[in-house]
Length: 276
Image (cartoon, rainbow, N blue to C red; front, side):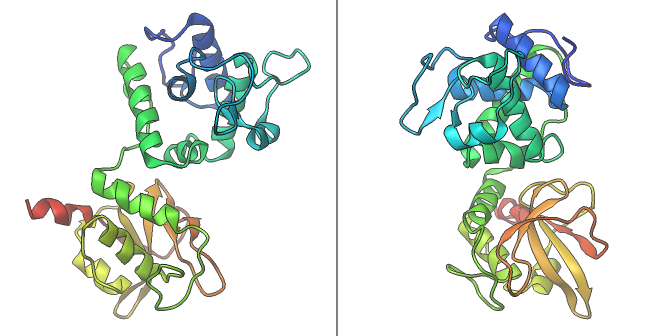
């Protein structure tokens, strides 16, 4: 198969040929780099080598792509057209994983999609590492794989994600509720960097980043007011953020890509580097 657009289709040394064909076919069908599917297959089961032909593990996960029952029921695909979707059959499990990634934002929001596959930043890093290795082995650039955050940015994003679903409250700084700048202040505090309390002061502290060059962990500022931006969020992927929006809402993912009130971006993670 030809693989996804822009990605090579040659094999990598540790991927069984039948799995490679399935990764490439599913990648082409769903518009996802096959290297990414192969990386998840490597992380989850070493391409089927590390799982039993039936049964579940201690976390309730099944098959070569390690689906739990509820997720499998929602995203299962009959990849080989035999009239049933079998979680233990890689011909079904691999396209089901591609569907799961696609419906959770891939390839545009790949970092978020991988995180949703397994809610841990260390897991995202591991998968991206495998994907980059497979890309390098076939002489490709990284097939538009997402930026891997620095250690500081990873902690900022990790903190913000653990607050998802908590209510917005004006002036709140956690742990039970947050306003927008209370969330970003605490996220950077968790990463060992002190930033001001309110959005306008966080904006002035900088350092600024040109639009289009923002990276996960940066801050995105919106809603210009007389003394500076009135809203702030944590960038988690291009065009995507975690933020505490407004009264009556909760900490959640949101898009800044189509907002007309974006003021700009800063990278407080650089403040830790300036101290070295």
